[in-house]
Length: 228
Ligand SMILES: Nc1ncnc2c1ncn2[C@@H]1O[C@H](COP(=O)(O)OP(=O)(O)OP(=O)(O)O)[C@@H](O)[C@H]1O
Image (cartoon, rainbow, N blue to C red):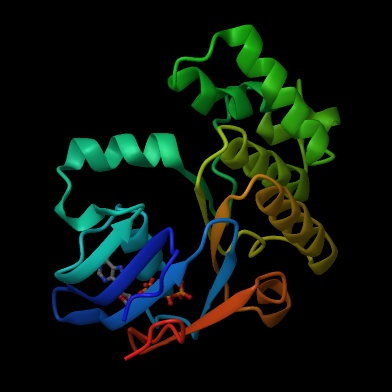
């Protein structure tokens, strides 16, 4: 049975890329404000699971239900709109826009959802402060360190108050000290605003920041919250 009170639930996901089976029956669930780590060896299907959960990749079969709506059945335009309004993303290499200052990067998703420039930049500055990286506000991503860049990327993901943040190896390019700082800032801020976090990682010390771990092996995962 699908776990009750979940915000995002995937059941029996299957996905192949040509002859390669990436997902072969994966289940997953996350509650509002919960941090769930998706663990597993390289090539086991973690990123594919995250992409299916975020509506970026359409599974061959199985379902993804977000807030009562079946993502897998929504038209592309509606899924894109949902990604903009409800989801935030943090990738391994920040993927900030190099031509914009850090405060403009954080303000960008707010601007795209219609917030006026001044208000968007005020909110962006608040978030940079919360992530202890306000010194980088007027600098461009190329002029700050990798650790600072990831904090800016976390600020950008959280500033629009998303319901879910998807983080794919968010500390993979950082040393352990910077990685731990980014993880504690990300999870504290997410819990504070009741944002769920889907965290893909193969590192146990990163997964230690989660409330729960789900292991993917050979494209299969079983969420223990599901009951038969
Ligand atoms: N777009 C794609 N085209 C072809 N094969 C793909 C594609 N995406 C993933 N795969 C394959 O699917 C399998 C699962 O990949 P996935 O990236 O989901 O694993 P992962 O657990 O995230 O790996 P890693 O930890 O190395 O990032 C791998 O064999 C991979 O090569």
